[in-house]
Image (cartoon, rainbow, N blue to C red):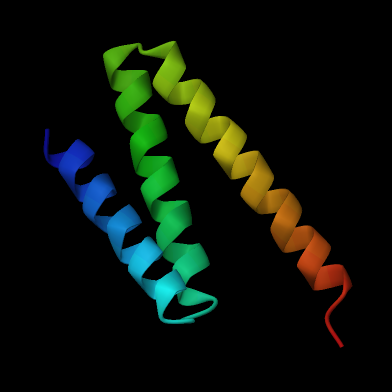
Length: 72
């Protein structure tokens, strides 16, 4: 229960950091939240929770790699 709420709060902070243009802090917060929620999925043996957070993590990783390649 603590992990679920902790990961949720961290993800909300990630959304807030995005809204205020706080990059790369928002990415770090999202990563912590995603990993937390993936762990919740593992603990609960809930494949849907694991799937959505693995897909989000892969998408975020692809975006980070893409933006790193276009940095000046």
